[in-house]
Image 1: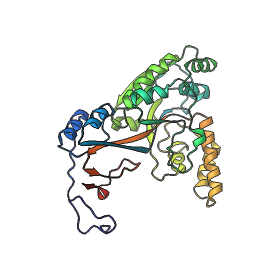
Image 2: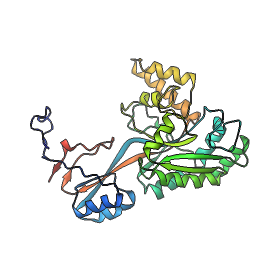
Image 3: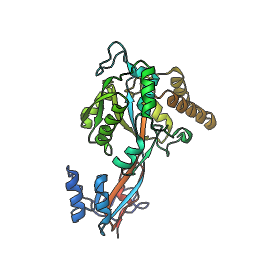
Image 4: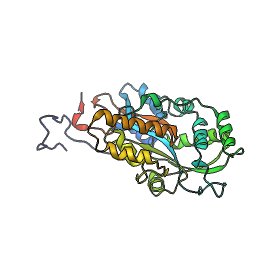
Length: 317
């Protein structure tokens, strides 16, 4: 209900008196509710239904680049992978193996077929609106499964190896479909990947507890600054660093940039860390997500990169 005593009412006067939130678990049922007029707004509609929604004269579909990047993490710290047939050593410790995984993923096929064009293929794990985003590094090497095979052979795995891929099935846009496609792609390079797709409540603890060999993760940057990414994902004690990656120089620079007041010096530190992480193939970037909202044409509401509807700015025509 509209709060007449809201402290910021003069700046953002509500034009909507009441919002009714209706949880609908089934994606198809959510779409049907919007098409029938039962609801006026649909957050993150299924991509496969977008064409149908766009054809409805009473519905509009809006999109904007999201502050979230999707990527794979690989355990580079354990001496032996939990799910692999390779015993006594960890293939992901070898940069050539990580590079092979990178080259074996056809991100353009994922972009066109699975994401229906609603993604931005990436080579870094932070979105373009984040401070310090290294545009010059955000271009993926060409898809090359043959080179991936050669790299695996050079690393001592001419017949590939087996590993489990952990994937959430209710968090990111088409996450499970992406993982299914990647299983097939990596198979062409000689890797036998067993997919384990679970709800986010089961998936995320595997990462934070460092119990996954190979996993999907999406990352938004609350501070819109690269330091946030490094703190959580690339330092030894980073709470979401399921890769276990640790490098003395990265640790040193991450700590230093948290107190550096000279902007040029701080930006140089950020750039050095991004270059180091990219050269080391610490993560396997996939893409930066695109937010899509579907709503009644009478509803006007600006879209935000954090995918958070701000109904204080909304109005019905």
